[in-house]
Length: 233
Image (tube, rainbow, N blue to C red; front, side, top):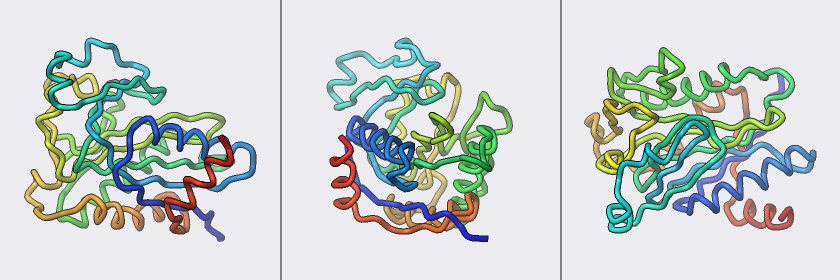
């Protein structure tokens, strides 16, 4: 069986607004039959993002605290509540067409979770997918190591996951992470795996992602990707 091609790009650290605009441009090209599937892998500067089920009260940090630490706050159309993105965290945004054979939101989330669990297993970390929808994400025992928040438009995906690698976990104290006041966050580093770079984890994620989604991964240079999207906008 021939696998679909999905182009992947390591973008390094880019702003949240820029990443959202890039996702939208790629999604619209895919909808119009002019583009291909993509997997964007990157880091963000410090930012709190509020999903469709979040409220301003989920950001408990004061304006002074946010300003002193350089944390932006963005509303977004993904599912879920509030989460943190920042340096040391691998963020993945798949822009996939789930038509015609994968039109199942639960399956999509389960597949993303499965790819993350498999990646963590490669580092000797025994992780698991959430057992309840209210706890969406990936867990190590009772500690949350990755968050998932998605958006679908005509079964084309945007947004995705955030996996804590060497993340400064103190930034999660400024919010109610994913609407769970008592949640304990963790990271690959906090689980005892030292010296791991985000870009390395991104590279190791590609194999499990390809396996879970039945895709063949093809690298796309960042410059090529950004140039293609400028022609759309």
